[in-house]
Image 1 (cartoon, helix red, strand yellow):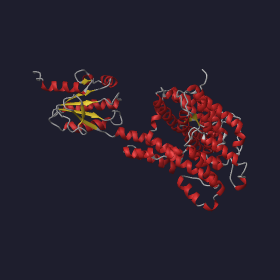
Image 2 (tube, rainbow, N blue to C red):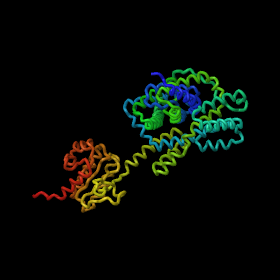
Image 3 (cartoon, rainbow, N blue to C red):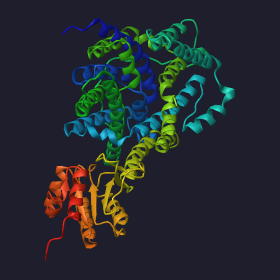
Image 4 (cartoon, helix red, strand yellow):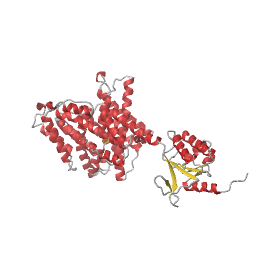
Length: 543
């Protein structure tokens, strides 16, 4: 099928954005510009063939560039290891991780990085990246975490390059102003203006560095000469790179799909992005993912299908082929301004402020941001992943059991702590664990339920509503059986409500056929309540 006019125009518009961003992101990764260009072309072509989103643009991203730089930095300069070989092998390993995860249908792994933690990580990363662009603008040398960067920059005021500062500020102002005209490729126009300025101003003569030549001929990667420990370190750092990259990409793809009613599937995206990264690494390209800014630009430009990505890939190749020699003349302060402008959306504190207003997850988000800024990109990323898992375990592991009462005569049972008008039966207690029961929380949750009902002599029946537990492991099943035994010893009968089939089968296999049988296990709380009421009001059988 022929490519539509809208897709051609959208693709060319995106290409005008991707060329300057590719050159800019390569500086973040500490690589020559061509490696980001290779990644852009490969990412666009592969995703157009294998992906499912009509709007996602798969190319190098600022976060993946920063993580790649941090991965390479874990190998000491004195080790004699080829740093570029390390970088491209990390991309290949990340691609293989994607492919293995997609083949094993592990798309849910993206959930290991929660959205609040990802927002905090992105915010801290944006601050770090922006501050690292200031020394090239000022023509000075400064490095380290954000605090050290600020101290280093402030301590060299006397050595600031006025021409570089003026150039960078003008470029940044132009980029921000051109954002008000989304129909124009602002980054490309500023890049072109920066190149044109080199014909009138001798930037090197004023101490302002330029980008340098771009070699657009791809080469096969070189296998780095590493020992066993170094290979282990490289694999260990490449896996989190893949995890963060997919979390960022899936978030973009998923949000676009929800907005347009598209059907996307996480495992399919794993395979598409994994293939793109594998091929990118093989041609010495940077890691690629579905970046939010480029994908949003593609959407805003009127793209209607993945063919816009094909047009963008062709546009990037043509622009670099025609202007590659000219890009070499680009002043580095202009390039730094492009990076800063590209990160502007990530510096918006509104997503973090919204968490404070919601009073949900704000502490882990802020901790993730601080971890990136204090510990560095790679360690901060690992801390962010750990925070996501810790937050989930804390929620799942904190035993909370709600006491339920009937709302009027509606047959609906609700938490009496939130609905004080709900009716409680003095002889039948109804309880609901607020989290799924599994080995981490089953004993504590049922112990709490036991404390709530055992010391109430009037209670003769207990109903446990288990709608949140789709299945139970052996620890949860054993804990439930032990809970029933304690209640029986106290003269109370346990009934189960809303138990799922898998959990019911588990009880039968665990030897609790009576508890899982039709006299004690019911599909609704009301059915369980009626059965318990009937058993309590019926006459006791004669001896």
